[in-house]
Amino acid sequence: MHKRKTWREKLADGKDLSKVIQIAGRMSKKWGEGTCAIASPREIDAMMKRVPRGKLVTINELRAAIAKKHGATIGCPITTGIFAWIAAHAAEEDAADGAERITPYWRTLKAGGELNPKYPGGIAATRKKLAAEGHKVIARGKRFFVENYEISLVKTVTP
Image 1 (tube, one colour):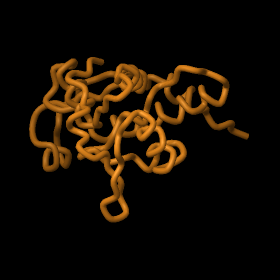
Image 2: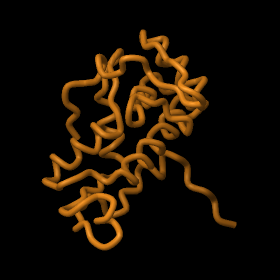
Image 3: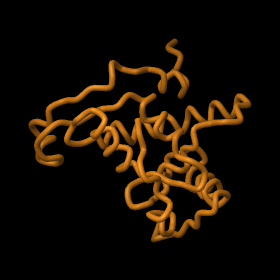
């Protein structure tokens, strides 16, 4: 029987990344022309760890920093989101094992300041952590956003 990897094992699995690929075929219809930087899971985690208390970052800022670091046209929108999700779950594994300092994943939002419902504990847990840091979360239909999130964005995120 195959044992599933822990979130920390998934985070540590570099998958021969980081790399830059040429945007081609169907990808070019959606992303345009040029190159796409694909970060490693640990690279995304390291960037998320640099967001201080009371500040926020969006996946798009992480993608822009990855693209800049690797000299690419864009940072991969798919893997950046997946690796942020893995980092969040790995952080909760650390917390469950008694770690006091974990990756503050709740400070990493989706585009437009939206909370990520796929983070551990869902919207309720993320909302509580953000409120504890002074952020106001508002509902727009079934989705939740940090009000005026732009004010709290970190100026630069370096990988």
